[in-house]
Length: 430
Image 1: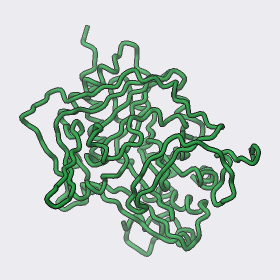
Image 2: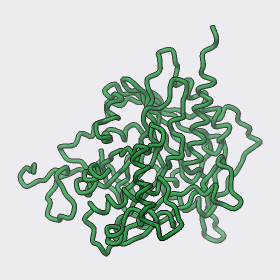
Image 3: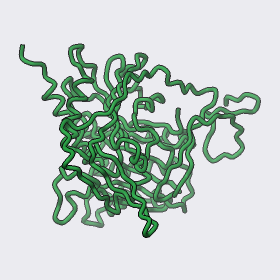
Image 4: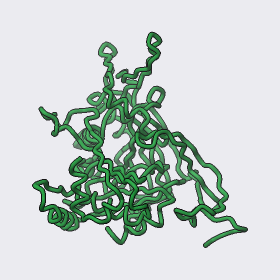
């Protein structure tokens, strides 16, 4: 173990010990609110062994893109539902797609801004702002979205020292520099009173382009956002044709092939012959990860563990909504079980708990139903998709469709304190 005069580096600190002596500096701190843990203070710490320089990332421009046509007479207000308001202290969800490098004749920034301006005409709430109203008569506060066409933030950046292979590291590890490639780090939904409700960043690297985004969760859920993103890429592809003539968490991306998923689904359903309920492919994958994480976490058998899955309710309502319905139509399904129950029962039992509806919190977001690899801005489809850096709260699994048909990728983020004991061991389980 690397030590210097009794000082232990952060990389050598392990969970469930209390006698470490470490010397760190606070890189960044913020307040985070979660429904189950309340308000906590989070910190990014660094020691001499960590390089936190981001000087190689050059921001070439930062601008506001507004809808192409602004009709001031049509000034829409969107009044928020109680469910929307529950998201007031949630962080901006951030995702990013890695694209191949376009040819030199493709003016990608002009193309992306022009097509974004058109897309914002259709998805106009993203161009608005959050408004806070102080109601003095009853001493309450209310919020609404003012669709005033203020616009979305568009950042153009460049880094010459990073290549596509740095994103596609061996064993699907996630590079530490990734935070610099996202535009809405540390923003919460409540910041929408002064910040754009949508931020995008286009970062040019040696041999590719990374397009990332962050959006205010009170405006839309994941299904709505990917509909917007797909529309934006389609407009870019069709209008862009030339005329005829530092870090508190660790991450890994786990890839489940179509065969892996089929085997897990068959095993899970074979375990629950006592019920008529059927386990889906996604439920089988999540149950497998839930069991693996618990097995390596070192938690007491009597502790509660929770798997929180964001479920799209559009087709589950009566009558059902169209899949294009914009806004927040998700429900947090929470499966709860004792650690001992998870370990003693099989894959099917764990999947059944998810079907029916860390302390360890396993938080699952996004969906393999989102068509992330169908977004083509005019120079080719993405070659990889990644989620934003973790916020250090609980174990986060962001689920994406894999690049091969029928496969699933899971972007796993685990607090640094559990890194060696959980995530490394998961590599052998998955």
